[in-house]
Image 1 (cartoon, one colour):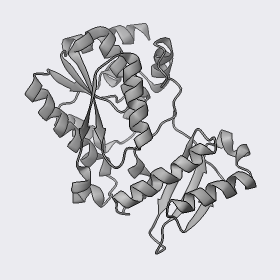
Image 2: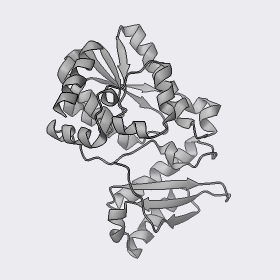
Image 3: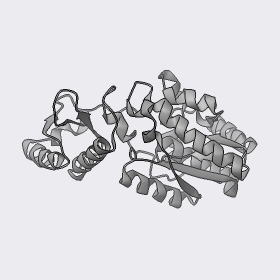
Image 4: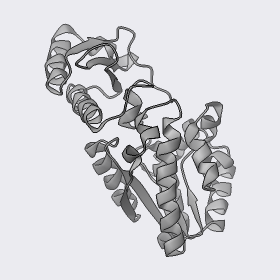
Length: 264
């Protein structure tokens, strides 16, 4: 792994000054931290702000960057203005990433940055990711992937750097809670955000609230908690969560008996 990290630093140096697409997640936080250690003031993190990003997640991402000591800017993205994104096809992530990378490309050109990087890792190559097509279109580099760093290795390296994200669960955007073909709307995203705040307030670490709107006039919520936390989902806890989730606007609340198995 040390060889991979040395190669990572070489790639970062060759592409300085560098913009990093930062989300506050495990991969981008590690990439930003390594870049800052190697490049200092020649790196800028940029986080996209849109209705699909929970307010708490934005705050936590900025707090992590502050802990690292690196400069991060927030840019507003307008994927919600794109009907292709709102229609929520399986390629939705392409339109989101294309919007982000377009904004980053404009920023990089106007300020004289040499390259833009994002946090795709080696394990991500095992999956079809529409966002990768957007990255290729805008010539965004993926140093973690290119040196072969896996998610597990990134977590280990993050612990060595003292990053609070080292053991953080995956937390994709709120739009991922809405089934393909169901339109992504600001109201739906607000409902999901409020519902998931209620689940988190009950002490769960890994969870999802699925927004089911296809078969009822009022959307219903499907709550999933991590399989290793299912034992804490007793009737009392369910009742409390149900009240709070319905307060977010849902007409009914269901709990998946199989739970949620998070990807590593």
